[in-house]
Image (cartoon, rainbow, N blue to C red; front, side):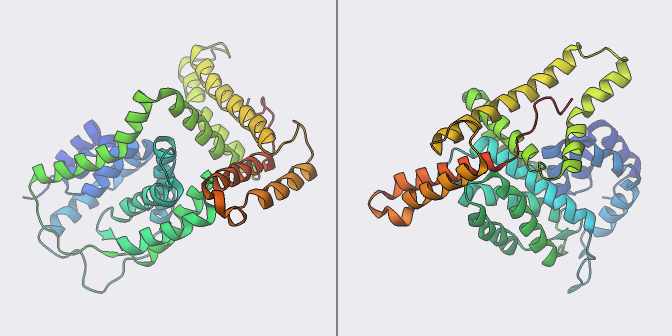
Length: 341
């Protein structure tokens, strides 16, 4: 049955951030992506307004037909590549918050989550990519940055490059009952939100710590790039700026801004606590010089390296990871607490 443009626009207006119009057009991957990201943070949903006619034409043309001649490679899209990297990072951050307590998280769960996020974007529209090669790139990259939250970035970039290299058009489109499609989308949505909801409801305190640690690590990625750091601070404060624009200049005493301030203070206090623990792990007093930090790190790494402690491998590995994490925390430049203002 042919798809109607007016119906598509109506669904876009009513349930666009939830992907209803994509579900109507048979673009299930795009619908799932919008469900998990709320329409790409709202920005992607708004930008689609001018693309809906082409989506409808593509859906009507693709029913029962091959998407493109066999052997033809889709053109390279920088926008799709950037979206793959961003969504891969987003999936990795969600996994870091909800699943980081798992055994071998950085070897199994993290690359799997990032790779699936990249593949989801790769499957949007009439394109797709190779499942095995994309996940393979993610799993091969993860051990290089084992135990470090920043691993999300290189894993996402490696998986996105691989997905672009193996991009292709989808095969013959087969019409499926709506119930089957909804069932599949529901399972995928639950797989994404289930662990996060469980962590938030059943382990609230730990989840708050994970959120603070993840947000702090994310902000620390930009510590060596001041311009990008200021840009991220602007983005995080954008809701407050919009609030002031709509409601007038209510001053710094508005409850909305206070909530934002609490979030920043919580993250900064957690980062302070991490630095104190890092000094304890390295056996240093607070305020130690970079030379002292580096010397203590090298000495402790030699003592607790797993290859030198074959009789107590598990304990050595735990200490070794703690030492690496502590050194990474203390190696990052400390940002003044009031700089975000």
